[in-house]
Length: 243
Image: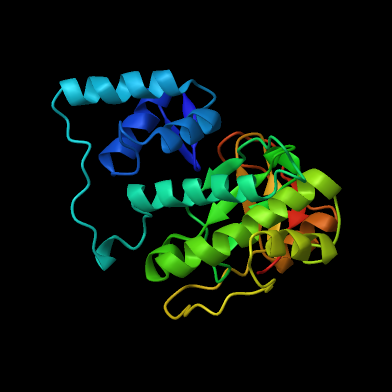
């Protein structure tokens, strides 16, 4: 059994097949294969072999032409552009961090924040870069040029200086190394996007769970909540910063 993005699969191979059938992973996308290999705890060669077997079994790995009807997913080619931009950002800050590790990435951010860098708790030392599918699709060029570096800058700051002010002097320094004006928030149109009113992040034994102020306050007063999947008690991780 394996859990990916909150869903239980029979095996990691099933996760790979799911991503491929949705057009989110292809055999000729080395950056994405490396990224998903890191997330799943397997080798890129294992992913390649699974995709190759799908090809030989005459299962299509090609996504249909993208339209706004697909706004709930980030197309594989756009994901590759985001991965490439992250690597470009790493190149610009080599004088600060010579050989950074690629953090985990999530592609299902909700709410009005365009992107987020999450760290601490189950995210470990490297943390996680999170991207908003609807805002990526609506604002692809600006998103890749502005939002991606914004979040990567948070990652660099965390790795170099540790726990400092989110949009402080260090973050502004990194943004200037990217040739960008340090701006805390985006100006994207968020009409039709449900606002995320659950900023408190908890962890159980199998996943991340977000709760609102009311439930958070009850937990802080001693109320216990149990995950329905793993039956573990929720433990507080952090409050998400709104960007």
